[in-house]
Amino acid sequence: MKRVLSILTICLFLAAFFSCGKDRPPTGGPKDTTPPEIINFEPENLTKNFKDDEITITFTETIDERSFEDALHFYPPIMKKKITSGKQSVTIKLLQELNPDQTYLLTLDTRCKDLRDNALEKAHTLIFSTSDSISAHNLDVNLVLDERAPIRQGMYFVQLYNTQDTIFVTSQNTEKIQNFTFENLPSDEVSVLAFLDENNNTEVDKKRELFDEKIIKLIEPENEITLTLSLQDSTKPVLKNIIPESAQRLLIRFTEYIKKVRSIKIIDQATKNRLPVYEYIITGSDIECITGVCDTNAYMLELKDIIDFKNNVTELDTLSFLNKQLPDTTFLELDSLSHEDGQTVTTLTPEFRIKFNKIIPPENISVSLVNSEDSKPVELSIQKEQGYTFVVKPKNLLRNYVPYSLIVTEKTKDYEGNALKEGINISILPLLYN
Image (cartoon, rainbow, N blue to C red; front, side, top):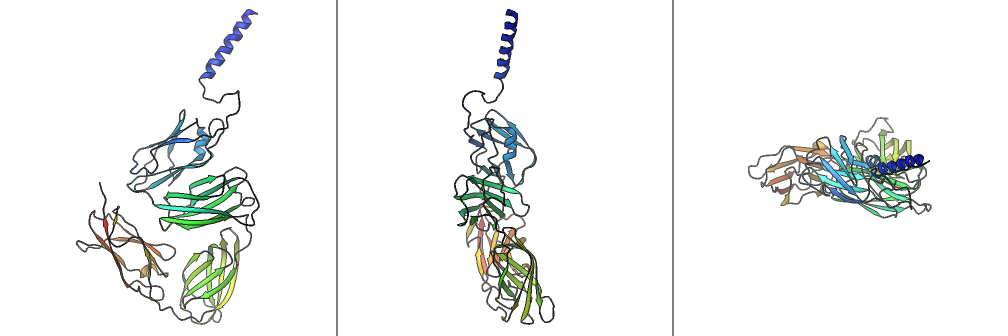
């Protein structure tokens, strides 16, 4: 009997000894429900000229490594990385070279949990740059509830996606409806999705949960958008009316905000010939359309696959209209320019955003950038954004401490041949301190 007791005592001792070294939650006492918190990021937020290959996040608790991997996002994406967890920290080893002159956004969402299955209360972000500047695009998202929305409980989420590749950019969440501020976004255009997460899975159920979504171009440093959370609207967009504003410009109006259309046809009702459609811009519930010169008065507008922001689709809609308007003969005017005359810039590759008050074809813009000391022109990259805006950049680095002149001449014309009312000539001075 004594021998049996001795063996049992030894076994209990060994079990206790080996269990001491394991990092796991205690089995006795009240359950720990305290969520983990982030104490520190290394590097610090808004770090510039990041050259390291490691990022370390320190927590108040030991973190479950698998949940950390599920919750971690980089934008632009960093695919090659290794994650190592310690007692109260997690280190991300970057196994690929980062893009030069790039702002990166790290997001750790609420799927990150400690060993006791307690999740972060909110998403956290870390912003850093591989150059001496950080993206200045900010976005305020205001959330309101549709007055018809039923009373619901859950967590409010706002998620941003890059519109070109639908890649996740970042997110925020809170228990109370409020305004969200996103700073230093590295994407120029984002799709904003807001929803009330009732089933606690951090994903939207568009058939059962309150949500709204819109696309916004981050043209200015400060941008703002309002989203109205409601149950899915199954009402399809319908043509409301057509307003001919000139012989070549139509304003097409709908009953809903429009995301896109697959095709626009304008048919001469007498000859059945198609009127050319050169360009169109979707703004809210309107489409501004530039066409060829009207030969007759009576036309039929035919639209296919009209999609609104609730993804309701009208496969075909038509409307007859008369266009008796004369050609527009008013001057083209500058609406805004991203730099002021005499401004200093802290980059050798400055970006000029030139916005006009009318739609103009890319071949009709006359712009140059000239070295003011030797009058030599700079080779430019000129890209047109959807809308009235052109983005102009030098293809090569400018010279530091040397003034340059941006010139937009009166040769710039709209589709109907109206020239710029007054030429634009501003000076900038690159000042980049070592």
